[in-house]
Length: 457
Image 1 (cartoon, rainbow, N blue to C red):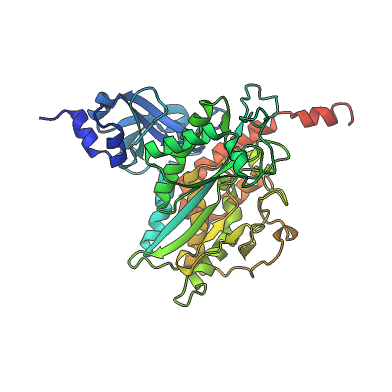
Image 2 (cartoon, rainbow, N blue to C red):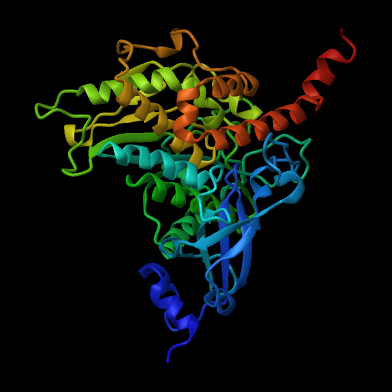
């Protein structure tokens, strides 16, 4: 007769079994992503985890702002009674946490209410809902995310400006060194740990490169299923932070952490294939663009302004949308044109895809991918024609995305088509949380205001 722990290990993915070979499970981190993409949950001994099928968390974790306050939502009583949700482990997501001192696993959990229905405002469930909308049409969405982030010097005083980290040369990381191998080597020990941790976790990295900012790195992931890729990004963000802390620096996913430097994006490459044949719906047999491809772009142009609140979820996010700073300011599309918000990369017809360059790296990956896919889906369903292709510098075109979080939330609330695809319950909760965050920010007086207004107006 085997033990519950041995039975558990037998059900784990191969990478977790390899990690635990000859050992037991000391601890299991039972986690979910909240609205901000922060890991919430609880840790328990491996033996205890093996003996139970589920556990509980209050649904108020989805009503909490990034500052720790709670939003009140009409028709929701979470702020008062905090009813429990049921969390059931998705063992296919079980991965090692190789930075810990013992043998620890991380497991993402499915979230339902006490009647067994998926909780509509849980981000992973929102993405699953959008993917299911594609599936019902016989379509399979494919995504490939890119992650940009900064390594920065430790910053324990929020009033102090963020600085690049100190490199092995004894100098701080330099800006304007995109694709420089020597710039990457400056913080090689952090990169080495990222690679080592990723290998232990079974996470595949397509490549790591130096971006344009001082200490800014881009990490490319493989393409695949949206939910699986969002899970991987959720894991990656935790892991990268841990790797940085080992070497006396921080990893930050803020959209714009350093004034005068480029912001950090989470570009998302999209394609859609026929669920039965696996054929890319974006390419015709002769290699030309299909109507489905054009409609996908048209849907993004029509509806992306309404989901900018998901792609740029904080007041800081809008500092990234600056002309000539490697971030888009509109929704033009073009072939191999990095000034457009929607770029069609160079590829063969089987790999034809469109890259959404609007999301910032501060987004919740589940919600950003869900929002982006929802726009393309609506375009394909309603056969929305795109604008003409933009050739040349798209920074000369007019801005057509919201300029701040308040405007973005107004558009998010007004677009009922997007709201239906994402789920009305989610949209209501998300809007309430983000409006409270925006209100809290507006009560803070910045150093710029004190410097220029205190004695001059």
